[in-house]
Amino acid sequence: MPAKKYLTWAAAAFVTFYVVTQPEGAARSVQTAADGLASVAGSLATFVNSLA
Image 1 (cartoon, rainbow, N blue to C red):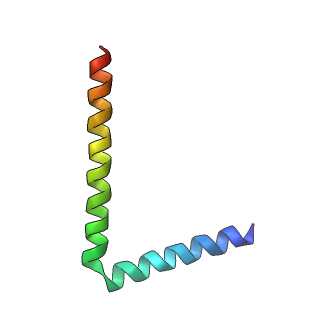
Image 2 (cartoon, rainbow, N blue to C red; image 1 turned 45 degrees about the vertical axis):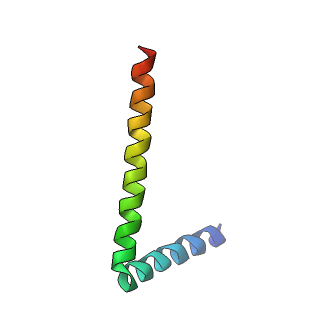
């Protein structure tokens, strides 16, 4: 179980380092992820509407 804890802390440290050193890149990554989620939601809504 300690390995999972260490990996979680290491991932959090990496994300923090990335955001501090590359804020534009981090913002772009978040925007890309949000756009992807919006696309998935739109596709899912279209699919559910086509069932009705």
